[in-house]
Image (cartoon, rainbow, N blue to C red):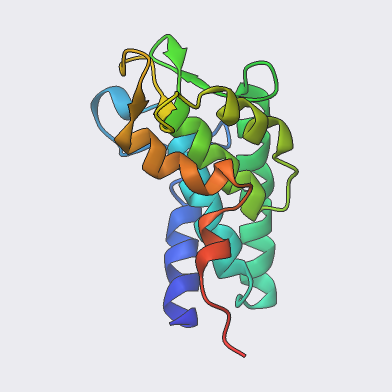
Length: 157
């Protein structure tokens, strides 16, 4: 599995955009990088790097640095991201997890996510009319508690 993971990571690095970010695909409106795609890619690269050869790890680390830089330079108010002209709760969640997996401090992002909690306990999105959005809440819970998906992988002892 580790050999396959590093093969996939090598392919993933090849999809990185010139700005350092990653996008959803190579068609239509998705030709730009996004916070959510970059956050997901960062988590995958951080995990694969743990079992990479020295040369693979060097390539992956260079990609991780570029992706983290993309996220940091596209942040709004150093604590969230926007998409389509409004706050991007889902993208912020994935970006936070990616940065966390890459070793960054995500306390400010976690704090911003907390400001999006509705009285029903869910995360408010621009389209959820002041109540929690199930999809955003499901995606945002892990970074809301300061973790990434990598923290949820059982560690073999």
